Length: 280
Image (tube, rainbow, N blue to C red; front, side, top):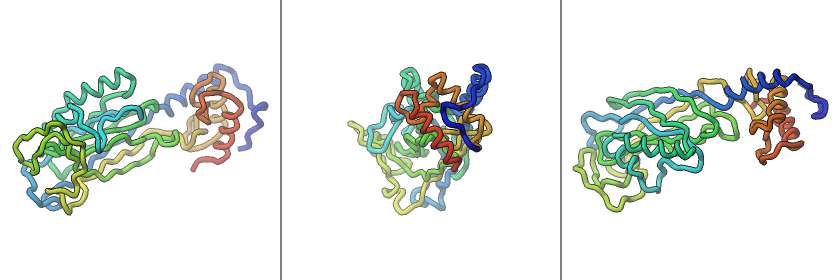
């Protein structure tokens, strides 16, 4: 499709523009994902001291901004992460996430269920908004002193486009709050707490493979590029031009293609450039 120069872009009624952009903004601003946790942890994969009743606590976390960390390797566990890793309880962590929500740093608590017996699989769906594109999740390895699996600060919308499919190998982390060295070790609190550490090369995980995988699969329509502003997504056409015009007129962030906080010729030029490049 050939696009006319900016000064000759088609004129559409304000109502038509609003309708076009209103529908597309809702679809593009949010995305729905299926989460799958495949736990491979078993007597066969991790034979050293493998416990009875091996399971994982409720997978829990939040989608949030880049300004906050729910947890990170090398960081000190919050009380919520400590309680999750030592007991599988999520009440304190939920309160911490709620505080982030109140401060507009997180959108929601994401709770995706547990695995009652490992090996096993757990799936769940969630919807997230582009203003909170980072994902962090955790689940206790149980029984254990203070070990867990998780991902932290995963960008689900790199370069302004929702990720289609992401798979992470997950390994054991020590929350640094208990000094136990085996699955059934007695409670032995550590004060002060030590940094969260990957223990995939430490007893009883030495020489063993991953614990499992976390997979995020997009199940809603999403844009293929910054110019893909309207349905049908994955195809750049007149409707995307119309949606851009509407967003530009309203000074909506979707039209700030070069992300400089201003709405001017440079955004029009950037739109034309990404539009001409087409979908990957």
